[in-house]
Image (cartoon, rainbow over all chains, first blue to last red; front, top):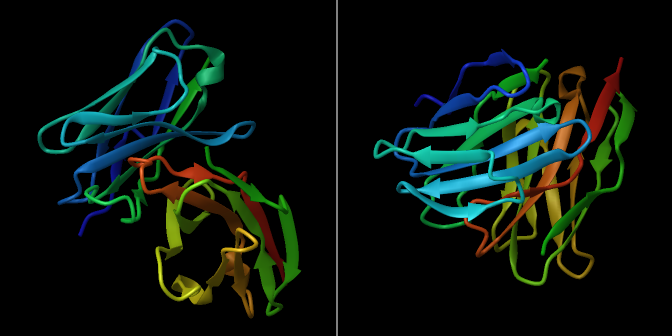
Length: 114
Length: 114
């Protein structure tokens, strides 16, 4: 079974631009969560989608948004990029119908802002 | 609100020695507990999980962890480490109403020396 796939693996953008990251979950998984990982703040939860609905959201500004499609694939968008948005963005999927089901992570997209 | 504290930011150890990575959590509700490992330039890989039942859980690669409710701890152990265990380890907690929001500790870098 294929794992969680995130594209692209690396991105370089400049301040003020916007970016879209993509995540394809494990087949059959309906929940997708997004996390930001930085050396200073560690791993922080961005949001979670289940069956195309956002069920939970972390403490990030409105510049960070996401969506989920009917095939469970998810995208995350960051607008008006700032230097502080440089991070590894991780996507995780799970079956989603119970919180006890573990999340499986992709290898992430490393976003660098110049 | 939940929080996770990993008591050691770095743990150096010699090959074939035992190791314990410490994790304490705080939560006002019942939780599910996880340990993940991250190798350089990769995402997070699930090592083991505690959902309910036996407080001693076994995971992949010879790791095990013990859930102690009274001390709110979930320490990770391995009786004999290998060079290949060098990585960063994250303890994470999820409550029954988290809807996909894992709360992570700051991570412990395990370095195994020959």
